[in-house]
Length: 303
Image: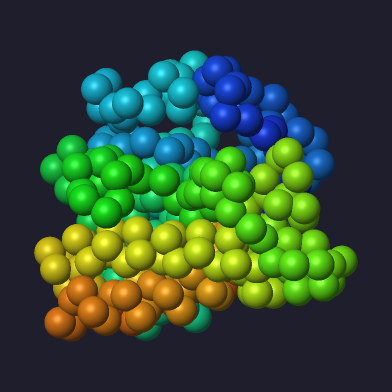
């Protein structure tokens, strides 16, 4: 997406499925061209650009070569810079960008210590310590692959992927869903509503409507998230954890469970809230990052 005068001027979009092996960077130029065309701009009209990726990023905007996600998200910065030589180009971790977006929203107080937890397909945290983004020595602060070693969690799966996985397991085991008339407005339980393609949003809706399988899935998701948050909570002692991403707005029941379970795990639990920024939280952070560069350049010119 691109901003013009503080508003979104144009955008482009590509969706990658779980089995899609295309590197994300391979279609970046296509998406950029669409965004520029929709905004009625050309490359020289742009001063700064920010690319968000789901991998650790160093202070220099580089992806550590041993990152397990390197191949899928790698961006050829040199090629991109050659195509757009006048751009101030910045590559940043997606969770860090989400945290930057939250810093400018009404979700957090200025100067606070908080975590922004991207929680869709995989968990990743953007860490802000006393108002400043913290990336660590190698850009890996907030990476959550270590959860594979944590009992009761077993991986960095987010709310959406857990909803699919756990619901599929329950339905394969033949667990009963809510009886006709109780599961949904259409008189269906989780199994009937979800069909062959399990939609995580429908799982959360089914839980809200009283479906037994879906409610059990939500309980399991809440417990895993609470454990994950507790591991960061004891180390960083944040004031706030913001659960962000497109799935957040549908996760009220998960939030209730996380708050309950976290209170039993941590003596000084952080306040946990759902982001109000929706599925574009990373995009908003990227726009903020690029806009800050433009403002900085304008200030230099003024001096």
